[in-house]
Image 1 (spheres, helix red, strand yellow):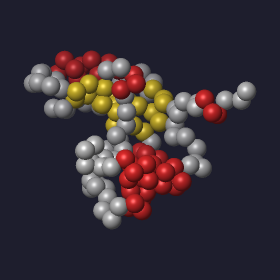
Image 2 (image 1 turned 90 degrees about the vertical axis):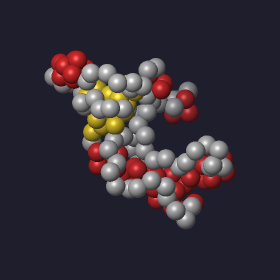
Image 3 (image 1 turned 180 degrees about the vertical axis):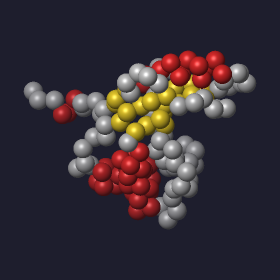
Image 4 (image 1 turned 45 degrees about the horizontal axis):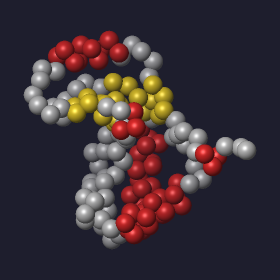
Length: 134
């Protein structure tokens, strides 16, 4: 998977043909208003066991990610009467491979176990061009 395809899913809104662009823009603006003054998240990513759908990296610390998700859900609730998706059961992760068929997981688990002794990867928000000093 290309690096620009990696993402941490936070909250769904719906299918693109069911959600209008005006609502998306309003939700984004409200989320930025609520979260804007807080520092960027610094997250660590560590391997987790593969499951039937793919292989992922566990995100830490959960509390900051859960706080951001609650902020996003609050912003959605400020625009819509109902917030989609349940608020419970959220498990922050970054999927690095998806499964499109059945395969034995033991060889993958063996390879991932070797990686567990590596220090976690840390992600940070990249500097935006408007943030640079001229």
